[in-house]
Length: 177
Image 1: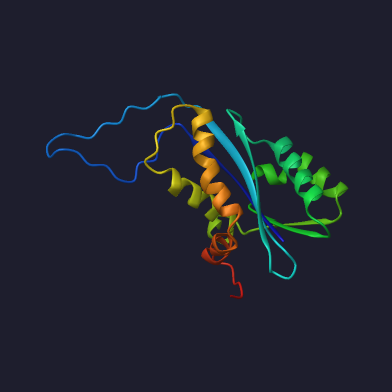
Image 2: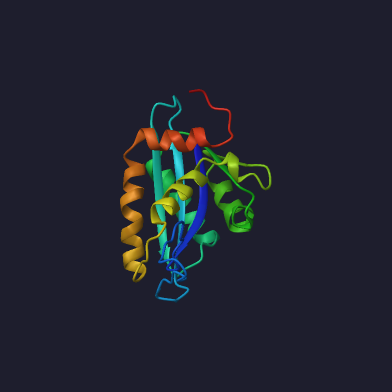
């Protein structure tokens, strides 16, 4: 089983807390450029639910299009054995003709869409929430620095069954404990 989603990260910081001397508005100097990293990831669940995996790809200053989704799915097919049940949202990317043709040529993938406007059902959304929470109050200098800031929490997620399981259980899916 594979839960897939896309997200993005920019150089503009996500502030969760600020402080300053009373009467003085806090200010933060940032690079000010709208450069970004687009990302795609998937949480994988083994058939017996004993092993979870996390796959991710990042694209600097690039939007994720159907081509990148197809490349990512091909990457998953190379690394996962057996049939794949793919669950994802109803993004136009996932319904693009290129993706429909791709799925038609890979019969081992069965794709299903979550209901519309239901991100709380997709465990992969909680991967992005975790990464963004870890980036909070960071001020990346450039895209290379932003990518470095993403690598540590992503690695922690990848190597922690407990954290990946928490993403599954945080979703509104009915899942045995």
